[in-house]
Image (cartoon, rainbow, N blue to C red; front, side, top):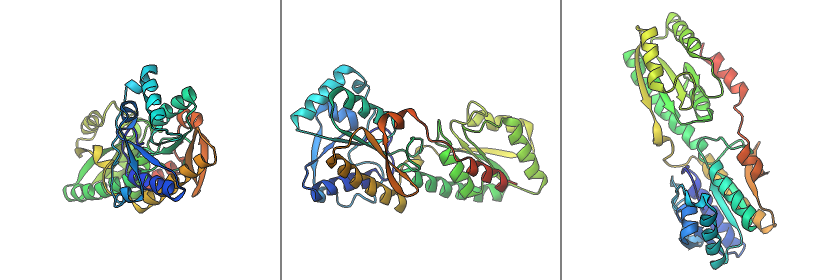
Length: 318
C-alpha cells in the first residue's frame, strides 16, 4: 500500500513488489487508497502483467489518502478483520513517517509483519540517506529555478522561491546549490533577517544585478515567504522583489532514473526480508547499500541536514 503524500517512484516500488512476489511464488494483494482502503476492504490482486508500463509514471496507481479513522482503535480493528478475511500475512507500506507510524502501531496491536519503504520528497525520514521521490523533486526544483533565473536576469530582479520542506531543508539546500542560488534559507539554519540583508547588500555591491533566494517553507526567518519579501522591499528598495511558490509541482512528474532504481531495489528487498521472517523495520540506503532500521527509530528520529553542504552553499554564494 501507499500512504500519505505521493512521491515520484512509488509506482516503481509497486511494480518491483508485485514482480518479486510472482518470482517467489507469492500472491500480491494491493490495498487501494492507503489505510482507508485497508479499513474498507478495498483490495486488488496484482501480478507481473498488472504493473506493466507504470515504472515511468509519477504519483501512485494505488492512490493515497490520509485516514483519521485508522488512528482509532475501532478503525484498526476493521482493518485487521479485512486482513484476516483476505489471508494477508505481511504488509509493505510505502510512505512517510506518519504512514510508517500507522504500520508500527498496527503491527504492535495485531502482530502482522510490517515492512516500511520510505517514500517522501522531503527526505526527512531517519534511517536512510535518500527516500523515494527526493531526487525527482530536487531535479524539478532545479529546472524551475533555472527558468526563473532567466527572467530574474532579464529584469534585474530578486526572486524568493519557496520550495517544500516544512520541517526539513533538504530540497532547498540541494536544489539551491545545484541552481546557483545566492542564498538558501532552511529550518535547520536560523541565521535571521540581518544575515540575509548583508548577503544581498554584498551581492549588489559586488556587481550582481539579479539574485535568487531559495526558501524552504518551514524557514523561520519570517512567518511566511511573502512577509519576508515585504521586509526586504522595505530594507532594500533598490531591489525589484518577486515571490514564486512552486507548491505541488514538486511532487509530480516522471521519476528520475535514480528514484526508479532505488524504488525497484527497495521493493524487491521488502519482499525478500518478509520471506526471511523479518518485520517492523524500514528499508533505507546508506552509501548505496540497503540497510534496515527499526520502525520505532525511523519514526522517532529525523534525518540530519548535511552541515558540509551548508558550508558549501555559503562559499558558493560569495
